[in-house]
Amino acid sequence: MTEPTGGRLSREEAIARLSAPFRPRRARAVGVPLAVGIFVVLAVVGAAMLGSGLPGWTVLDSLLCVAFGALLGAGVLRLVGVRAVPTADALVVRNVFLTTRVPWATIVAVRFGGGNPWLTLDLSDGENHAVMAIQRADGAWAHEQAGRLATLVELHTRPA
Image (cartoon, rainbow, N blue to C red; front, side, top):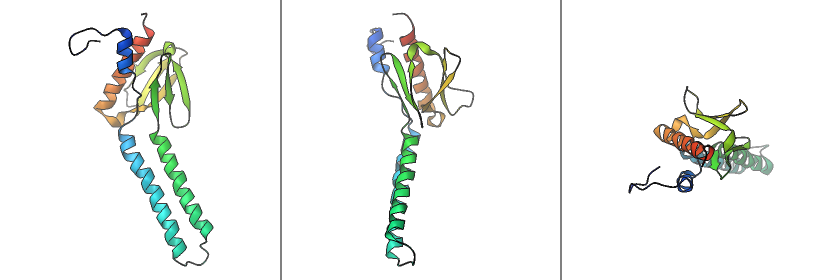
């Protein structure tokens, strides 16, 4: 890797420049306002129903409506919160339900193609691991991020 001035970066400098966390763009741009909107709408509905004088609607019903909005909003935020964080010895991948630490030495290949919605890592044990932080919906930017991750894998796995 070379600097814009034409000088060569050391392996450690290259790794440091490439080690920003990976996060989806479009999912965050859509998901955060959606989560807030869901919560606000259900909170307003809960409050409006309480003030409507509808027989059988209680304070508990309104509170449960607000709690349901908070739960749905939190679920959407969990979908938005996927990320992959490079560390010195591993890639820490947080998908929707699980966070997994994938040691650099176990990554054989980085794949981002074939119509898959997100990037996958081929591991030395024959398994594949999804990295939902790099999503096809992000277009060209996602391809740049896939290239950045592939470069990080190469830098971490080749001899110094």
